[in-house]
Each structure stands twice: as C-alpha cells, then as structure tokens.
Image (cartoon, rainbow, N blue to C red; front, top):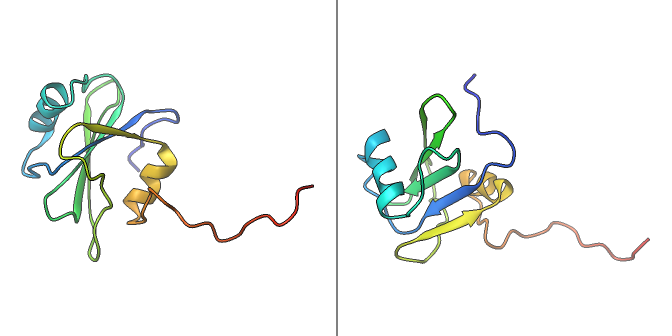
Length: 116
C-alpha cells in the first residue's frame, strides 16, 4: 500500500483548469510559477482538468515527488469558481472532494435538539 500524506499536511487547490497531460515536472513548475508556492515543502497541491472528472495531487514525501490521480466514472469534482489562484482545504474537505461530495456546504444528517 502506498502511504498518504501525514496528518496536518496543508492542502491547496489550484483554482481554474489545469492541463492534465502534465506530470511531475509540469505540475511542480505550475506550483512555483502560478501558485507562488514551493512544491518541495511537504504540502499537498491538487489540480483539476477542464472536464472536471479528473484530479491530480502532487506531494513531496521527503524523498521524492508523489503524484496521485483519480478519475470519477460519473459526476465531477466540485471546484472553486475562481479563475486563478489557490484555495486552502482541510483534510476532511479534501476527503469529501475526492468522493465527489460538495465540500463547500456538506449537509448534516442530524441536528442536536437539546444541549446537555
């Protein structure tokens, strides 16, 4: 099994569509030039293609760059409306995004009725 990022890693979404033909070097360059971040900082950078059904995540694990990819068979990944820049997510929001759930306004299935 491939280990994932450790707890507490910062997650960044690259707003706007990304050319999904890019690999390690192209995405690392985009992190540096377009996002103004260091791709070797240990943070996780997530990119989405124009159609919205494919995401790639780039992460430095201390030894090398790791590139994750996921394609949804139905539906699309919910992405910020901004045309450029970067958006920070919590690990919980990233989990919802990767499941195809709208991470911006998750619906609670219950509401407490009384305190204590």
